[in-house]
Each structure stands twice: as structure tokens, then as C-alpha cells.
Image 1 (spheres, helix red, strand yellow):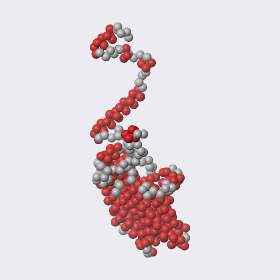
Image 2 (cartoon, helix red, strand yellow):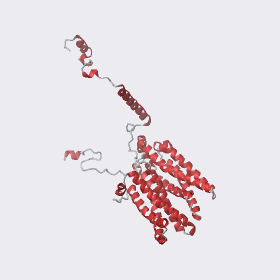
Image 3 (cartoon, helix red, strand yellow):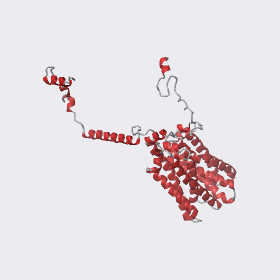
Image 4 (cartoon, one colour):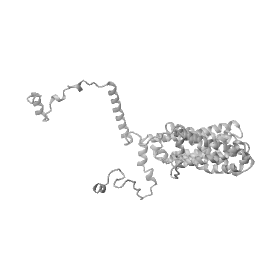
Amino acid sequence: MDASDPLRRQQAARDGRNVDPAVGRLAGEGSAQRASPGRAAAALARLERFTAERAREEAEGPSYHGLPVLKEPVWRWMIPAYFYVGGLAGAAAVLGAAAQLAGGRDTAGLVRRCRLVAAGGAVASAGLLIADLGRPSRFLAMLRVFRPTSPMNMGTWTLSAFGALSGAAALPEAIGARGLRRPADLAGLGAGLVGLPLVGYTGVLLANTAVPVWQQTRNTLPMLFAFSGAVSAGAAMDLWPPPGAGGEMARRFGLVAKGGELALTWALHREAQVERVRHPLGRGEAGVLLRVARASLAASAVLDLLRRGSPGLRIASGVLGTLGTLAVRFGVVAAGRASARDPHATFEQQRAGRGAAEVLRKGEAPGRMPAPRGIEATGQESVEHGAFP
């Protein structure tokens, strides 16, 4: 447009910006473009989600744009099933070793059943782990190192040793070789000894992660899993009862374990002191599973007290005990998944001073993060390094 245009002179005199009105005119190739109704609707939906997220953040506090801070565990159903089967096998080996030490002909049936359950559980545990890993070589790869600070590595070694010992203990029972009874007795005692860490190490494995609800209940989880394993062994003996006094021994073993597991499910809620971290334990899928677990365990314990030799009540107690301990394992894993998806759980735990800061002694400065020379722990180049490369 010519500078002598009266419209341009009028605009320049009014606000002094000397804006050419022709610039705002729709012309050229771009002027023919039309917005897609679908894309416009998608953009509007994104704007609404962003506005809703901002409103939620203002109400709940700042987070990481509403996105999870932690990666959700990718375990499939095989892992909580392994938690159950591994606990069952380890507790059965411990019960069998205790019955073996107690001695007497009346406990021989209980010892035999415990050895067979332990050996079968060891095989099933390895199968479940390999199914989740995808191929056997990944399981074998974990045996290339021995790292006491890694619960997963220690668990792999424990399961391998337990499988060998429980298999040796159950071999005479499986093939009827009476000449191997003394070595089998020694292997049964060894399986009972190794079965103790196998029962509870999976709780340590969960507690050693950064998932808020698992990390904050780290004192209760190992004990809960240990008692849950004992309940599963007692329930298995209800469904496959040994003859003689061994049946009564297994009933008492399971009854005491059910009381302990019930108490520890309540302790789990109490240990999670930060309210946002505690949410998954009482809501959603995990909340339903944990309530089912408590109801099943309580009903099974009542049936144990009332059954007085009734086969029907014994079987019902075994089914309810198995259901309860399965629900505990799946419920704890579901709570961890929900907790990892919630960014507020991560932030509120840190703001409450829980986690790594909790274990530092008062007045002790945290250790320096390892970093290459000349590079700060934050990744930035230090001033000294920049001045004298």
C-alpha cells in the first residue's frame, strides 16, 4: 500500500504504530485453508483436559503435569501368582522340617505331604518366573552374579537352592526309594532352612522399590508375606489332610498364621502414614481385594475353631484360606500399581519427609552423588572446570 494512502496515515496518527492494514488481509495460499472439524474438536478436548488438570492441581497441589513420576510395574499375573506359590512352597518346607524334628510316626504323613508340596511349588515358581521373563536364559542370567544387596538376585539364588533341596527331599516319596531316606531327611531340613527366606523375601523385594505405598510399608510387607505363606501352607494341608496327629499340627499352624496375617493387614494401613500414599489400600481394585482377603481369612479362622473333625468345614476353611492369601498378594501388587500412577503420592511422601531422608540420622549430611570430575551431580559443568579445562 502506498505511503500516501489516507487510511494508513490515519492509523499511524492514532496509535503511532504505523501498522499497515493490508497485513491483516486474508490473501495468498494460506487464506484458502480451512480448519478440520475433527482436529478442532480434538484441540478443544485437549484444552478442556488441560484446564481440568490445572483446576485439579490447584485443589490438590502441584504435580508433574498430572503425569506419573514413576514407571508403573509391568509385571503380569505370573508375578503375584509366584508370590503365592513361592510362599506356599517355602512355608510347606518349614512346616515339614518342624514336623520332622518333632518326630514320631504320627507326623510322617505331614512330612511327606509337605515335601511334595514344597518340591511342586519350587517347580511352579521357576515356571512362573520364566513365563514372566519370556525365556529361560533371562532367569539363568541372574545367576551369573552373587549380589547380597539385591533382593532380586538373592531371591533367584534362594529359589534355586530351595528347588534342589526340596527336590532331593521329595525324591524318595515320588519314586518309592527307601534307601534314600536318610539323605532325603537331611535335604528336608535344608529345604526348611532355605524356605524361611523364600517365604518373606518377596515382601523385601517390593519394599526395596520407590513405589510410595510399598516403600512406606516396608516394615510390614515382609512379615505380612511370611505369615501369608504360612496360611497358604496350612490351607493346603486342609485341602490335602495328612493322617494322624499331623493334621491337627497343620490346623494349629494355619490358625496361628491366619491371626498374624489378619493383624498385619491392619498394620499395613497404619504404617502408611501419608494419607495420599494410603489411598490405594482402601480404594479401587486393591481395596476390594484386601477387603476380600480379610473377610476370607477371618471366616477361615472361625471355621478352624468350629470344625471339630467335620470334613466339609475343613475343606471350606482350606478354600477360604487359599482365597484370602491369594487376594493379599494380588491386592498388594494392585496397590503398588495404583500408587505408582499417582504423582501426588510420590510428592506428598517426599514433602512429609518420608523415604530416604527418613533413614538419615539427624544432623547427618546426605552423601555426595557420584559424578565425573568437573561435572556437578546435577549434570552441569562446575565453575572450576569451566575456568581451567
